Image 1 (cartoon, rainbow, N blue to C red):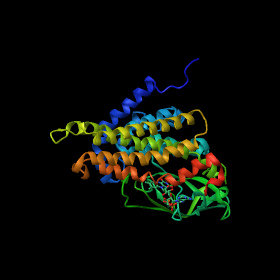
Image 2: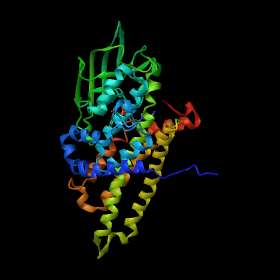
Image 3: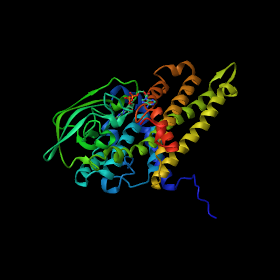
Image 4: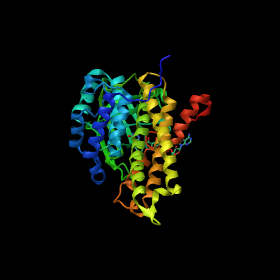
Length: 388
Ligand SMILES: Cc1cc2nc3c(=O)[nH]c(=O)nc-3n(C[C@H](O)[C@H](O)[C@H](O)COP(=O)(O)OP(=O)(O)OC[C@H]3O[C@@H](n4cnc5c(N)ncnc54)[C@H](O)[C@@H]3O)c2cc1C
């Protein structure tokens, strides 16, 4: 009987991961702090990444991607995020928009935008959350009204990552009557330079490169080519893309924890107290050993989820597990690492405080832990377990 469970990565995957690590160490890590104060991701670095084939590698070659599998995309994302969490924010959004548009968009429209993401580094945005609340996402109010050969959009999206930097957004709007729930929602591709759109930016705690903010729609006219997927089915069809981004987000946050752990093992071997290296104390090494164990388990869960996606097998519950556990575990591990560095890590001189603020955001963004647990429970005991 041949073995079917295989944890090794191929030579090609290893080469890509190595290239990503090298790029991150040379071009991302030195500017992690600087990027935060700038509050935006520099296009030059994105162009450089694109030339190396490190952006949207899972997108079909037709759109400029490498047509690779989602596991490989996750490994590359992880390698880059060790150096800068922010690149993960961008890559996850690009991958999510890419997955949604390539699967459900109308080819003549999607072509231009997706090639723009890969070739011209156009940043996409995902606009689902509204001021009334993000968890009950099907209860949205932004309206898209059919008017002859057009749709007219009125309303507001909020908490949109890249609100002020993005060239276009995937926007969920109500096309059915109010109170029609998920069945009356459609998704649209909306160019953010369309007349009637204004954006504003929040003063965020972390992840400031993403410039999270609000998008206001006032009588925004869209051609009928811009709905994504079937009208009225936008919620169910297009939301499935989030199963992909949730596994990627797990890896994004864990990569930051991985980097922090590696640095901390090294620092406790060098720093001394009471005449001996810190590493001789089990009170110092045991929390790190526990972190190693949990990180390994959560990372494997994320990779398994991506593997399930590659096999076209159901992975909604697994993706929800990655999403609630990964960011929380990463936060806890980075906090442990900060404390084991002592006072020097409680300054902006070392990256731990920034890393903590960064990963904290993803305990909320893309769905909170409670909502993820509702999804997991619903898969176990059916809809009676959940309020969403
Ligand atoms: C860093 C970051 C990036 C983001 N990026 C985007 C983006 O690009 N696009 C976008 O559309 N949105 C984005 N968001 C918004 C995010 O998806 C929402 O914030 C999230 O879905 C929660 O919605 P809410 O903040 O309105 O909280 P609410 O829905 O108001 O919930 C408040 C609290 O109540 C809990 N809660 C709600 N309902 C239940 C329930 N039934 N059972 C138990 N607990 C419940 C929640 O878990 C939460 O703790 C981002 C948010 C952050 C922080």
